[in-house]
Each structure stands twice: as structure tokens, then as C-alpha cells.
Length: 420
Image (cartoon, one colour):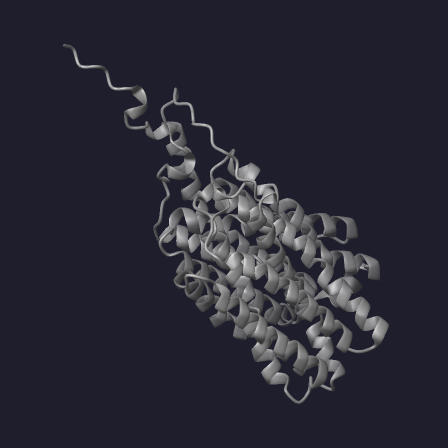
């Protein structure tokens, strides 16, 4: 008797037919990917904080109105929210390495062109081009961690978050000295284009290898259909977005108004600026350690509650004793801002696949930045209306309560692909 032919479905699945997240990447792992990620992370806030440090000089140089200056400072959150949402669409069509090459080139060209113009319109448009590159990179980094370093998520996320924080601090601290050294605000902004250009270099060979691998794939193979991950239809997706948005709201409010609060408390402008810089500087080790802790804990509740306690104590101290305990409040704020590396790590922890990670990252960050845009604005409105800092700190405590509530939802181990 002739043995029956084995059903085709029991044969090993051809590699080209497997879902993309199971296909071994031609650029998997390796020092080059890690170096490329760290260089990208160094650039993710430099274009923003350098402009903040030189805003008065830019306003004078370009003749910006108060309304236009306000729009320029709000532009990052608008770009991060709107353009970041397009990243999953880009990734479905081109390899991540190629997308990052274009993103870093956009950041380089945008930063360079905006310091060569005397036109307000061109300045805004070229700033938007630079921010578009950042918006895409924001979404891609958590996905790249999941794709290339799945067993070292906490360590690699901590490393790139530390690089991001370092770039933020260095750009904010050095933009003014560089501008003074060269006698123009244009130098203080334009110098960061060189750093963005360096970040392109590791991704060029990675992009070429990805392109070669795609050409070498079986031409007749038809990729299997994949179920689209839709975080907007899940409780976890919205909880991630609210947590990201609430912590970013507080972070942008602190960065925008903390120096003014300390100046109102009697500190000299130079001292107030140093205290603000201290929050970012002290946040560097927190950014390194937080993802490692998150990756080792079964539940994130201790971290969520701990970060809430640090931030709440800092806000209360700033409201009632800003001068007497300034250094303590700065330290507590730095610990509380650990919510940022925590949520970046959680994006990877709450997705099984690279596809799920990029979808969750795009939704959480794009929606979160819409929420975050309200922070500096509402703090400013409350400050102007009341003439003090009690009401603004009360508002931030309210935002912290929302953040903590969302944190309870994301603290429990679960995966976005399992939710419908």
C-alpha cells in the first residue's frame, strides 16, 4: 500500500512565507546596530533643547512675534504626535534601517537649513523637517530593541535612554556658549546638524544589507497575511498612551517653567538655570537603571508607585518651600522623571513581536504627545491667572494621579497582540 502523502500544511513553512517578525533580519544584533541606535538617541532632543536655550536670540534675529515663538515651542509635540503616527506605515513598506537613514538625513538638512534663512516661514518649515526625522526615530527605537536585542530589552533601552538624556543635557547646556563663541545664535543651533550627520553613517551599510537581502529573497514567494495590531482598540493601548502623555505633560511643564519658578523664589537666573539642568543631569543614571529594574520585575507596580511618590513630594515642596529645599526637590524630580524610561521599556515588554512593538510605540507616543502639548500651556495659564505656583503644582499633581491610574493598568504582564 502506498503511504498517504503528508498534508502540505505539515511541511516546514518556507522562510519567505513566514511573518516578517519571525524572519531573521540581515542586520540582527551586533555592535553596529547598537552604535547606530545610541547615535540616533543622542539626537532625539538636541534640536529642541538647543532652540529653547536660544529662543530669545532667535526671536530677536528673526523678528518672531510672541505668538509665533509660542508656536515654535509647541511644534515638537505637534510633530511628534502627527508624524510619529505614520511610522508603522513606513515600516510596512521599507526596512527600518532605510527609514532611519532618511529620518536622520531629514534631521541633518532641517537643522542646517533653518540657520541659513532670515525668513520666519522657512525657519518654521525647516524646523518641522528636522522634527519629522525625530518623530520617526522616536517610534523606531523601541521596535529595534525588540527586534535585535529581545533578551536584553532593559539593558539596551537603558543605554539609549541614557544617550537621549545626555544629548538633551549637553545641547541645553552648550547651545548658548557655542553661540557666544561664534558670535551668532545660528552656530548654537547649526552645530547639531553635524551630530545628526554622524548618526546617518552606521545605518547606511545596514540599509544596503537589508536591501540586498530583500532582493535575494525568493521572487515567487508571497508573504503570509498578518493580523494588524490595532492598539487604539485595546484597553492596554489607551493606558500606555495616557501614561506616556501624562508623564510627558509633566516633563515638558517642568522643563518649560521650573527655572522661572526658582527665579520667582529668589534665585539668580544663572542659579535657576543650573537647578533646571540638574534635573536632566541627575536623570542620566535613572535612565540607565530604570529599564533594567523594569525588565526584572514581574509587576511594575512598585516602580509606578515609587515614581509617583517622588514626583508628588517634589511638587508639594516646590509649591510650599521652593527655596529652602531646592536641591532636594531637584533630586526628587529627577527620580520622578524616571517615568519616561519606564514607559519606553514597557512598550517593548507589552508586545510579543516587532510589529506589535512599532504599532504600540506609534500609538502611545503620537497620542501621548497630543496630551503632553497641554502641559506647558496650562501651567502658564494658571501661573498668569493666579500669580503664583500653588495652582500649577496642583494641576501637575492631578496629572500625576491620572498617570498613576494608567500605570496600574500597564503594570500587569500582558501583550498587545492578545487584546482585541
